[in-house]
Length: 323
Image 1 (cartoon, rainbow, N blue to C red):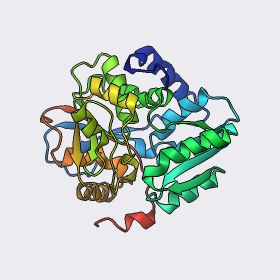
Image 2 (tube, one colour; image 1 turned 120 degrees about the horizontal axis):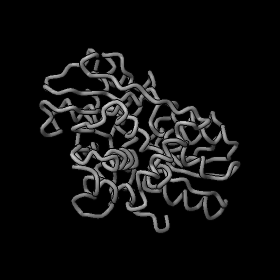
Image 3 (cartoon, helix red, strand yellow; image 1 turned 90 degrees about the horizontal axis):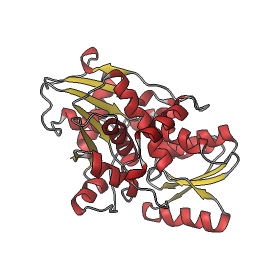
Image 4 (cartoon, rainbow, N blue to C red; image 1 turned 45 degrees about the vertical axis):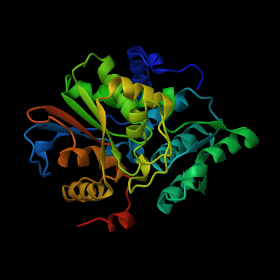
């Protein structure tokens, strides 16, 4: 990644990326933000919560934001390779088809077959391998087939694109007290946190939420460097094998803390949201699960933003969740 560091991320850079994302031919949506009190969702906390419906985004998740900015800065008709459990791969494939690029997605064996089939339907090749082998297969493609690697979370253009979500939040709520965001490799959390803090919201507390079986950023905060681990969670999109270097730097600078939730809490959150008419995948409901399970400190009386980051879950998967 060269000399890219947290200092490279400026408000001007993020605003420029937001313009790119807004005007992208990929059709990125300014997703709705609704007050919790205008839903049938249960809430025992006395606070003013707003839900950002990124599950309704183009391709079903926030990933298209970063992809729109990434592809706008790469040569058209390139040959790209990436690694993804599904959502980034779906946005990458969608963009590849639009831009006439050749692409390959290296996916963990644990990713649902439906995701693999969907990605291939855009004309992109898929190779499924054990999670521990993802990076070595990507490196082989770069070395032997002269592909260009597009990182699914540790990339400046990608993070700047994801920051558009944070800037959209501030259009509706200029000074939120608390913002809660899911965290896998940390690209979304880093982008949103940078956007909010650099926009002058110094008092806003931003929390990342990870599954306890895939807590790479949580461990990275403890060890004060980006670390990897054997990850296992029902939220496969939040379970990359290591935390991103640039996301870690940005999260260290702008994020209050990382909180952990378990798979049972994630499953219950998917079901609760579904009963209220919101289709949200396990990875997408991490922030919601953290709020309803009292994992975020000092919310009473506060204005809180909860990001539902993705809705890519099939009927075949939903039957595995409690009613």
